[in-house]
Image (cartoon, rainbow, N blue to C red; front, side, top):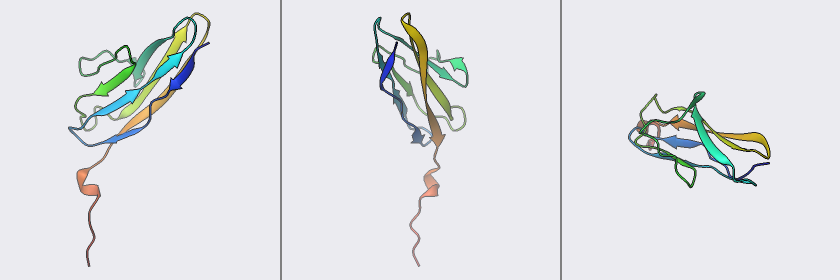
Length: 100
């Protein structure tokens, strides 16, 4: 049965910034990692899914990339396991110094 070694963490980014997720799983046989965004497999050229099981948004687009991303690990020895992380958009003008 697969087990997660590292799970993705929620990200808060600004438009034009970059969000990265890391998802790693162990097991015998070695689990296959897949990423889903809004229920669809991630396959866009804007994302990189590599051997280290990273997913990168380059760069973030305001509403298009705000979503829950799901990492799934599967192998033939057991049921698939899933974990999730979210990307939320932060406005740069949300943080201001209030001076009297």
